[in-house]
Structure formats: C-alpha cells, structure tokens
Length: 423
Image (cartoon, rainbow, N blue to C red; front, side, top):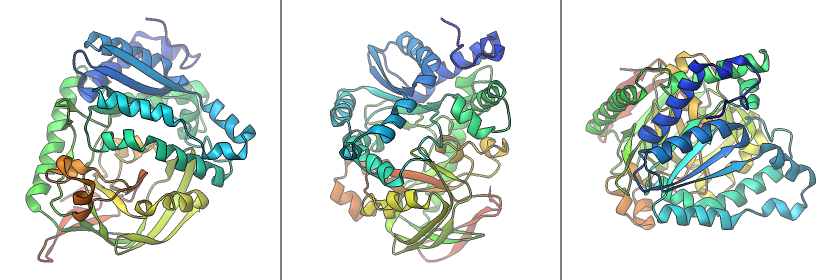
C-alpha cells in the first residue's frame, strides 16, 4: 500500500498509527457500514482528495469478495470552472446518462458507498441562480437512483474523509497540516475507527439505537412538539410511521448502517401536519454554500415563510425546487450529549452536524419509516403522509435549550427530551 502523502505533507499522515486508523475506517465501512456481500459490485463516489481512503476501501471490498469496484471521482476545482466559463445553457444540463447508469447498477444488485468531505463553501461566491439551476438539473437526473436509495432497495453507506478545504473551514486558525490532523482525529473518533475493535463497538452502538427506536415505536406518538428560542413547532407524524435508528436490512437482504457516524433515531413526518415556527441551531452546508440562521414557518405542513441571515437566496431557490421541497420528509431526535456534539466542533458537513442535534429534513421521505412502506405504491405512500421531492436536505434544530414533547392520538403530552437530553 502506498503512503498517504496526498492527504498532507506533514509527517502525521505517514505514521503507523494513522495508517492503522485509516485501515480500520476502511474495513468498518465495508464490513459494518456497507455489509458488502461476496460477489456484489460496489459503486463508490469521492473527491480527488479522498483517493487514499478510496483505495483502502477498494482493497477491503475485494477482500470481502466484491466482484467489481467502480469509483467515480469528482474534481471540485473543475466544478468551479463551469461557473466561471460555462455558457448559460450549460447550467440546466446534467449527466443524465451517468445517473441512469448508476440507477441501473443498483437495480442489478450493486451496493453504494459515498465518501464525504467536500469543501463546505466551494460555491459560496458563485451566482445563486446558477447554483440553483445546476442543483435542480442534477436532482432531476439523479432521481431514479435516489429513489432506490431512499427506499433502501440496496445496501449503502456514507463515510467521511478529511480534506484540506474542509479542515480549513472547521479549523480556520490552524496551519493546514494541523487542521487536517485535527479533523482526521475527529472523524476517526466519530466513526469509532480509533477503537481497538471498531466492528464490536459499532455492534453495541447499533443495538442501543435500535432499543431507543423500539421504545418510541411503543409510544406511538401522533406528533412531536419542539420548543426553544425561536422555535415552537408541532410536527405531526405520518400514519403507521416507524422509528428507525442504526442499521437496517435493505431490500436485497443485506444489513447495512447507512451513515457512519450516526447518533439519530428518525421517522417520517406527515407532509400536511407541520405547524409553527422553527429556527436552525447550526449552519447548513448545502451544495457548496453556507446557509445560516434559518427561520421558517409551517402552515398545514407547508413552508409559508422562510429566511436566512446568510445564504438566503440559496435557501429560497432550494425550497422552490418543487412542491415537496417546502414540506418535511424526516424528523430525527439526537441527544445534545452525543459524541459529535460533545466534541464541540461545528463540522459544516451534514453527515456529522445532523448527528450532533435533533433535525428535520425538507423533501423526500424514507418509505422504510412506514409499516410495509417498501411495498406501497407512490399513491399509497402519499395517502399515509409521506412526502415526495427531488431533494432531501437535513438541517439542525436541536440544542441544549430545546425541549421535545410527545403528543398522543388523544392529545395528551409527555416529555421526551429536556434541555436536549432524553427524559
């Protein structure tokens, strides 16, 4: 295996300890996160900065019996060139052929692994209208593949790779090598790759998340009520909703943990039953733009007012993607004492920040969060309250100043979380 000098020039990235943790991260991503089956193909996506981790994952995938690993690398600098020099019509174009190919690979049984680590502010200086057009075109093209993922037809997972631009955003006052080392330490800790037996650690954590989801399923709340500074929001839950947490058995029979890290238990809200105002508690990094201090008001499930202190134009265009973009597709509960919140870091990456706080997602709902959801038609899903959209965007609404109550079908209320912690 070649050394990982591509991560940085510092010696910290050539030590046996770093190599061991990186190898553990790759191994646990394949064995526990993905649950890759012998003979299964793997489709992986990553940025160029993640080449060393992608190679490690490829190695472990073949050791696990993968028949073929295909990795699609993206170059963020090339993405910027499109905005600088592309003709106007190009911003409505997307590589439909590529996404159709990915969807076909999933239909034929391939697994999906994404390596996260993009520059949180890559497109922050670009024209919001152009960014919105690109996002809309990409979302439409990616829809066939996204549906297979949100319905959990395949086993899939997301893991993270520290990159120079991401590290600089999280640790702006540190030299590049030190920032990168600090971010890697945080990723290894959150992903349990710093533990002697990450697979065993994930098994225990997975069991705890399932136990929490089981307790909520016994309660059968009809709604959740969030209260705190700038927030008084009642989220009605979909008919026959299910709480999930940790891993799940995909439609192909493989058990996977879709997000690594994960600290949430989540379910599907009813698309027509959100009422009140909610304020974000952490910035949202969306498609290369930072959106901060989001405040929206829901009426009959739909956003009727929305604003952000920063990135407001991007927020407005995001919720105009389609009708479903103004409605909720997910609500998740995360204690403020989660390891990611306890780190004190703002990761500016949804994979991490959503696991530091309770959150909601605008857009597409997960059919697996409904009883028998995988076998329901789109019309049946809609009748139970599941939202449909081209997007699925999580943003954080929880903190140690947020209380959550569960509302029964009879209208009775009881505490679920106080000051961000489980009651």
